[in-house]
Amino acid sequence: MDDNATCHRTLAVPDCLDSEVIQRLVWPAHSPDLNPIENVWDALGRRVAGRNYPPTNKNTLIRALTEEWDKLPQQLLDNVVQSMVRRV
Image (cartoon, rainbow, N blue to C red; front, top):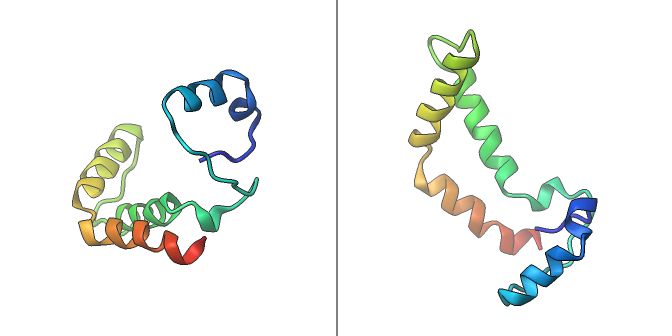
């Protein structure tokens, strides 16, 4: 995903993508609706916030995020990826 950020514009990036035969898509500079991971982050955040014992420090937050990430339904991830066809 190329959002025209300065780090994506350096000469090394297109050279690397070309050498690996990776096609680039034209991508608007700010397009959260075209970034499917945002839906996953939202679902993950809701799951962590809804826990019986919410995280109270960095270590418990990392543990909660890891546990809830592992529990995300595969169907949710599949749906988010498939939804890109409608978004583009």
